[in-house]
Structures are given as structure tokens and as C-alpha cells.
Length: 316
View 1 (tube, one colour):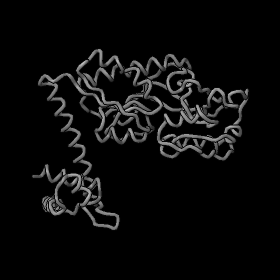
View 2 (cartoon, one colour):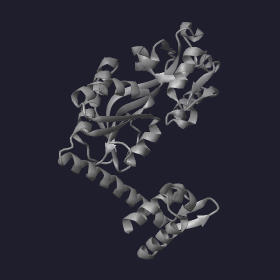
View 3 (spheres, helix red, strand yellow):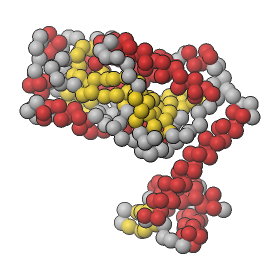
View 4 (tube, helix red, strand yellow):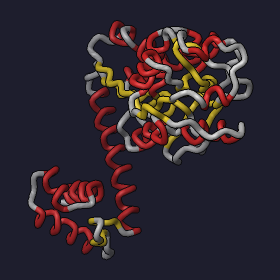
């Protein structure tokens, strides 16, 4: 009964509403209320407060939710490990990739992983980097490829494998592409596109303009799709931030774009692999991990701007 009550508890915590949790679980609100009462009686402490915003977790409720979610992740990984042990080694791998690195991830895994493991299933999603960290910690993915933040949750660890620079980029037909020595003011005068404050790097990009004594530009196309932002660059006079090495590679979405090089005007980032500390990787997930590590190391070497380096981030 406790396992079912925990499931009910987590759904209420997620939705902050008995009605929405009841809809998700296809049970009555009274069933959920009784489950909460049983749990509060078992632990002798209040888990929820009713507020105008809905069912809010108490401090004790937040602690229980944290441990319950961690237990869910561990049980899921245990089930996958036992399935592999019993002979179901066809495998399933779940990978999250940052939008700007997703093309490299795709080319590293498709079709090679399928050719090597024809029965395996690859689940590959692209997200903004701040969302990746949260989803990975929740157990939604086996591992991720993207920007390694300065600090990580205790449950995650990362390996930095390459360096990245976000710089202004335009279509090759844009007037700025013909300017020999563009300035920050030239950039401010143009329309911009991007994901705005939805991305982890937004504050850093804004700070570049402020540090140069300029007002950050207005985004005339604000989108949560990086592909849409690049399409706007190709079809208009919009400027966006893009990875310098990918623009110079001229592949995929970055074909036809050029960088606008203003001295000192770039946002430095580290890219790498992120995974849960002690998390289980199936054989096919381990192979995908190896392929992506090699792809990132190769991309860093091809950039030719600094010696590849490997560093660890996160608590040891």
C-alpha cells in the first residue's frame, strides 16, 4: 500500500492539485485524500498545506518527494539492469542533447549505433541546456551531451571534452558579412533572434553587450526552437548567437551562415558528457556513450584552436 500511496503523493506534488492528480491517475479525489492521510499518519508529520495556489509541500513533504523520486529512478535502473541480465540485451538508450550540439550527436550515433546494435532503440531528444540538467537528475535520460555548468547537483557528474564559443552569426548575404571590422554598435543596430531568457547562456550574452557599454538588442523573433532561430537568420537580416566551430564547419543547419567577429565578443563554454553518479548504463547505452565521447574529442581536435583537455566537474 505504501508504494501506491507514494505514487499518489508524487502526482499530487507534481500537479499541486487533487483534481489534476486524480485525472492523471484515473482515481477519485477522495482516494487521494485518504492516501495522504495514511502517509501523514504513518510518518506523524504534515506533508501538504492547502494554499490559494493549490496543494503545497511542507518542508517534510519536499524531503519525502526528493527521496521518493530518487527511489523511482533507482528502481527503474534496477529493472533495466535485470532485464539485461536475463538476456534481453537488445537494449534501449535515452540521450538528451543541447540544441547546438544535437547535429553532432545525431551524426555520431545514426546510423552507426543501429548498424552495430540493430535490435536496440535510440531515444534522442534536444533541449536547452538548463532543462537537460533537471531532466537528467530526474532520471529521464541515461546521459546527456551539452554545456557543462559551473556547478552540478550532487547526483550528477560530468566530463568536459571540448571548448565552445558562442559568437554573433548572420547569413552570408547579410550586410554585416561584408564589414571588415564590425563593432558592438553594428550588432546592436540589427534585429536579433533567439530563445531569449529561456536559455542558460542568455544572461552571459546580455552581459557581453553591457560590458561593451551597449544596450542589449531587442529580439524581434523570440523562439524556443533553435532550428527556427537559424531559419530566421537565413531568411532575414536577423543576427543570432551560434557556436563558432559549427558555423565554420558549414554543415547542416549552419550552412550558409558566417560569424561576425568582434574582438573579445564571445561567450566561452565547455561541452561534454553528463550522467547520474552511480547510474546504470545498459550495454547499448555504454556503446553510445563511447561513440559520443570519441565524437566530441575528434571535434575538439579538429577545431584546432587549443589542445583537447579533459576535466571533471561536480562533487566527487
